[in-house]
Length: 236
Image (cartoon, rainbow, N blue to C red; front, top):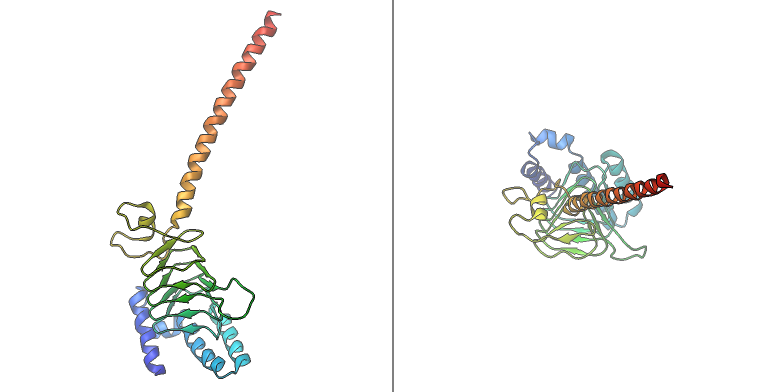
């Protein structure tokens, strides 16, 4: 079973990372694979109630890979963490099959109370770099979460979420938000620009231009007033 899982892990890396060249490279050079293998062992120890040893092993994995996966987290098959640095997966997180996480992703909790406090991911989920998925929420299958999004509410099946706070985008042709996270063939781009930030930048630019025009108009008004006052002074 373990060997079969390892073969699946290696195969899914080839499918999702065009930089992967051969099996030896994946086994020796991919921290996401290393973190997953260590998690499977620590998760077994956790379920055997050897929790201190499990935590020790998971901390060793964090030291070696830069990826923190709590041994209590439940992770499905063909799970891929690309690049990996800064990924955090909390204790009560549940991840389905065929999911992909990019670097800087957090599956975090929003409560100090024990019990379910981390996200549940369905099958075939992609979460872009730097995104934060927080609380005991459900991300349904085939959903996509854009880079740097902050998601605190449930996400429906097949939805694409962007922005802070995260919100679904409508799949309309020519829509800026859609174009920012989908390439011309309609594929999700995990490194795409966060649409809300880009839109915010455009709005800020317009606001600055408007303020500049208002300031220039007021300066012109002040110059006219000064000229009038100077003219009256000269007459006296």
